[in-house]
Image (tube, rainbow, N blue to C red; front, side, top):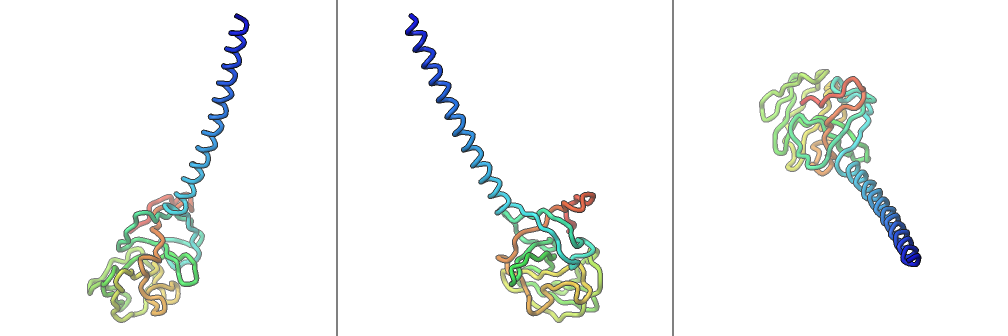
Amino acid sequence: MTENVHELKLDKKQTNDNMKEKSGWVSWLFFIISIAAVFFIFRFVIGITIINGDSMSPTISDGDVFLTSDMFYTPERNDIVIFRDEDGYDVIKRIIGLPNETIAIQNGVVFVDGEPIKSEFTTGIPNDMPERTVDSGSYFLIGDNRTPGESLDSRNSDIGSISKEKIKGQAILSLLPFGLMTIIPK
């Protein structure tokens, strides 16, 4: 009888040891999957961008911090987007022209396919620009600070239209300044 009790205690101890070992492996597996999920989310789904410069003033200021999204994003007019320039820097601008549309600036007014667009979120008066057609699969991006020399954007012939592949994602939420915490206006 004492042998059976002793065997029962040994079996119980082995069972507890096996459960602890399995629990340890499950915890490590959960940890690794969690780290991979966080990496995936911040690499492919959302990002944090710190603004450098005043090309998007008055909408966005130098030093503002934004949450961006690049998963399942389809660019639309007036979206504020982040794109990668030729030097590898992230740049933030507003989409004004869609593929195959014509853009012109006359007397400080931006025209898309001959129609003036609303500009309540802008500052400054841009220089005139002759009519241009946006390349297929590309977008015409311009800063909200339209004062000549304040925004290096699609108005510059060296930059021109920005292909969809260069657009990293859309700015969706202001994180700093804290009081702002609003969705980006369109």
